[in-house]
Each structure stands twice: as structure tokens, then as C-alpha cells.
Image (tube, rainbow, N blue to C red; front, top):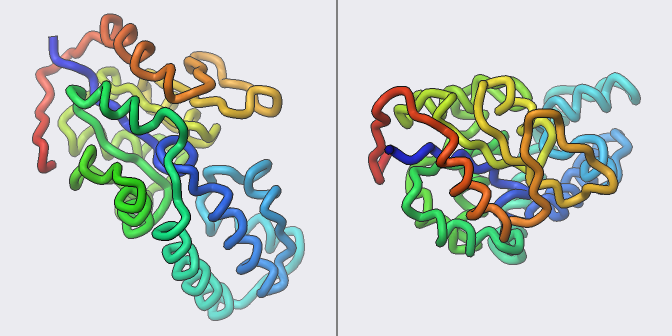
Length: 232
């Protein structure tokens, strides 16, 4: 029986980039007059598309010109890239989980830009697990919580949604994958503050992932023969 496709979120699931991202967002947004604390990202906006965050902040605090926003975002992303390359670490258990699940077809599905995904995976030594199998909202022009990014990745990889297991720490990603009709594992590292949505499977550590995936593999029944290529 062919193995299901594993679709991994990146930030907060594989790599511990969210504290760095929150700090750089706070610096950038405050510089253009949009009040924002790192805790705002980690609490209210975790996993959301950056421009959606900006839109909500402008609705609360007033509009900022597109030129200012573009300049701020460019500087923010440049600073973030430097910090990711120098400071980034993996989520505990992520590397061990990928090693144990290396026989499974897999890809990364992220709201972040593709260069950011590549920088994060290379900085933490996870890039060889995925090669070119990286799917960015900016490339697909579709972002979580809409289901189309997951469906796009599954289609390119040659899998039906029912034959996919999505792993995500953010509720926007969990809901997107559920709406796509996939089996979903929620890495809930903040169970006191966050509730796992109905129909998603909760784990609190990536060390738990291999056993859960192996059990689910017995229950996920592929309906078509999937195409999978290491260089896809």
C-alpha cells in the first residue's frame, strides 16, 4: 500500500522561527506607525499572511502608504533573512521525526515566501529532506487559511487530498488542511492557550509525530496510485 504524502508547515512546526519573525515584524510595523508587539504575533496572528496582518492593523490604527509598506517589508525581510541564517534552530524533535519518516513522500507547505523557506531549512540542515518540494503561498498566490495551497501542493505531488497528512502548529494551517479534506495533525505546543480544532489530531511534541503518522498510515487508504519523485 503506497504511503500517504506528508505536508509539513515550516515556521513553528519544523523551525523555531516565529520569535525572530515576531521581533522583526514588531520593529518594522512600529516604524510605519502601526503599533505591534512580538506577543501580538505569537498570540493573535500566528501563521497569518503578513499583508493580512497589515490590513487588520490599518483598520485599527489608520492607513499607511503603499510605498512605506513596501519599503518597510523589504527591510524587514532582509533583516529576518540575516537572523534566520545566524540564529535559527529547529523545533525540538523535528529533525528526529524527519529522519524516522524519511521513507514517506513529503513536502513543505508555507505561507512564507520561498526564499525564506529555503533560508530556514538550509540554516537548520533540514533542506535535504525536501529538496525542491517547497510550496509557498507567494508562489501559488494562495494562502492559509484557504485550502487551495494544500490542494495545490497535493496536486503537484500527484496525491488526492484524502491521501495526505498535514502537520501544522498554527490554527490557520490546521483549518486550511481540514477544509482541504486532509488528515491533520496539530502540533499544539501551547495547549493551555490554544484548542485543537475538532477532527484534527493533537500532539504536543514533534517527538510524538512518527508513531502517530505510522498509525494513521494504516487508516489512510490511497484511492489512486500516487506519483512521487525525489526531485519534484
